Length: 377
Image (cartoon, rainbow, N blue to C red; front, side, top):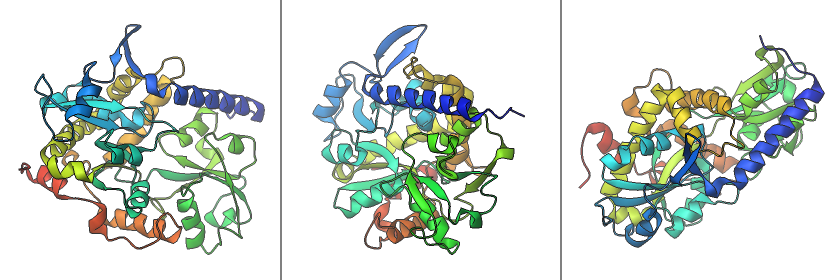
């Protein structure tokens, strides 16, 4: 069992992690793959991939080497959360499908739906509920796959302050803003509490400092990142009370794959090829998490990357993408009941303002064709 650290030590650990986060965010647009201490070309498969994508991706025409350029916008910098795409790129799965895929790293200043809507990228990934909001605003976006089959949201509490959900009443709780507090609000409401009256919801920012210094009785976390930070700061399961939002039916689906709807009309076959290669990448990554972490790490800025964190993160991401009991052939399929639950929570807490028909959120035909063995025409 890992020794629990003193509060000052934990605060120093959090401060270090904050510095890492800031450095990683600032370096996102200059990501290169590094092997044996040398920097290779950018993530693009060739130095001209970006220009080729801009020139020909609208009509799906091939570049001069015969590959169809596709630009994919990630929602954050390279990390294990996106390992399936980097594995597909690294192992040549996209090229096998005749695609020249460029992965654009994201960051706090990157609005993925806007990038895809503008045509700068044809395909992107973000939280499902984020796409719901932009679809309601009239953005031409179509979701074609759900990467994380289970919600990654958990709420992590000091066990000496919170040992049951009822104990959240009257406490100061760390949440993410911009609609990302919806799972916590749903949890409180479901258990007979008014989120605005029976607890204090405070912005936790991008760190877990407020939890480490005792300001928050609990904080919002993803299983593959912020929860790991508590363990890395010295906490053990004996110190924590962890509420799994999925199990409480308050989770919202996170990473999905969506496309520009106008582009999809003329490039359905290309979209299907992208999905087929991506599924292959995720299947390999989930079965080989250590190797997948190594691949992702090779694209990261070594001055700020934490290798051990990526290895542990890859293991947790795999549990969300390929849950126990699910066959790899079902990766990226669409769990309609969980999508509906996300829609319901988004509507209840103002992420969207009107009820949304499940059939308008997703185009299931691409995944249906892939799982049935059919081919787009």
